[in-house]
Image (cartoon, rainbow, N blue to C red; front, top):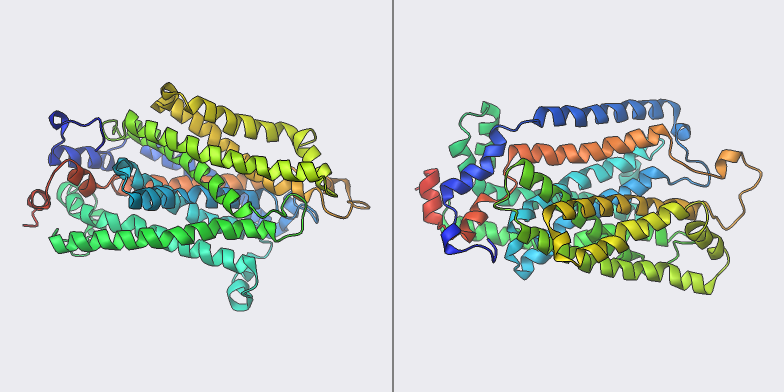
Length: 451
């Protein structure tokens, strides 16, 4: 599986299957965790029902700040979802074998957050019953139409890229999950799609995965590039930038990378998979994060140095609000605590161990969320025309309890999707892990009874 493996510590097929399927059978604390997530979702659903009844007036959004926490959350969700493309597609196509134990984790994160990204857009609509108008009357010239299209396409391809590598695992699950409910065994049978483990099937499944891995790259780049265009094409101070496309995409890789590191730690400990997700993998992800954050830091410098030097009309007020004004504390915590300090720490090998990586990943992910807040809100607070002759609450914005509850519901919903997938299917591809341990297709077929 990685450079640390030797001939003496090769794993048997029975051991691999047992290790990767055991968490699916019995998992202490699973029900409690599910109930906790459902509780958050129910609270958010209650808040959303009130929002539907009373309108968006229950939020802090007004005529000027018309994009608030919901749109910032949408950018965060889309950003987190892009990690599936980076790990499964880009690194996988290059040929890095160390991603095998974490590729499916990245795809689970991509599916969960991409699915809920679309719902977050619905939350931001005052009349969600008119959402279908986008498809019936939407214009090709509208970036919003592009955004919805690429989000839906990315969700579809991500689901396929998650499901296809699962097919060769289904015979193993049918073999060892006989004590599970009938509906689950039936599901494993359906998802096997008649898999018998022939050489032709393995060649076909690898070819299909490769095609999808190639196809998802332009779609994934488009999804966050188009999202950035929604901002950059709006004549607002702080958004009129030609680098927003690559800036958003790079930031998305940082966000998703942090989410994967957190998931790696949780799964390796909670699912007892430390022999599969090792210090080697945390070290590799730490190095990858340093590279991504250095590129992202470069774009951050470009974002502020150029307008700060030019000092065009309105830019000075915007930059002052970020550097010294009402958003300064959040801005510097995000830049220093969510990026600069993590970069410095991850340069040291000791900080690329599991526990330090977890703490750094949490800091980066929280910083990434509030970075999207900083991108969205301060710009709207500085329109080209002065804010005057309006109520006092038009001059400020801070999300209400309704917005935080509904956003919390979206985050809990994405985590719930990941949790359910982790409980239904192995979080690592059994057949790929077995191949890397030198186990042949014939041995796997003999184990599953497909011979």
